[in-house]
Length: 285
Image (tube, rainbow, N blue to C red; front, top):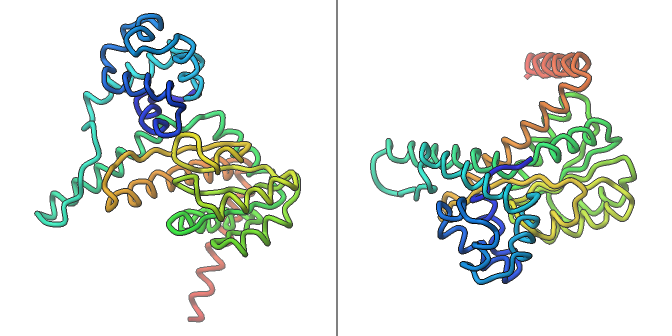
């Protein structure tokens, strides 16, 4: 079950249908009021139909308006303890301010990601990654760093894994995937064309598609069988790639630990063997 009604609304806002966006904007402007309203009263105030409110809740992966209200109420309570917004990173000023801003944004990004990351989807991803014949990791630009990190982790526990960062390489790997394999597409925007095309090729062969994108409807997540989301709501282009990357790495760490704890003893042995191999190789440098 996911949490974070306010986060979900903000993240999905631009991908919602016009009438759903209208009620979402009303909720975001009056969250404290909305948690005390019936669906009928909200429909009247937002000037939409009751069915639109139900569809909005379902678009955000909630069972209905009541569950959405509960998540908004939880957000309001949590935000009393946290700073509400991401901080603008100043290029001038004391180092202490820089430390505070960057660290706050990173922590907020992880907290917000916990609000939109669905445990059942994480569990399915871990299960498929654990039993996959092959794992292909696709990322471009900043997302390529995330893919490379996951490859390094999976390789250490003896998982067959390939990563690719340009379309030609991705397409070549994708074309040779089969049913029982996993293609993992990483794209914060969810709109990276190389990733969309590569996952499309993999999907045609019956490969299980896992996506890691920002929350909301986007071409990459729509292709996926298993959809993992991160959140990073900061407005500054300077801070955006940093906080979103931290959120993505946190999800990767969750997946890795989940895979590693399956066949735990065997995976611990693999980790030790690779550690020893690297240690021995350094003696000859």
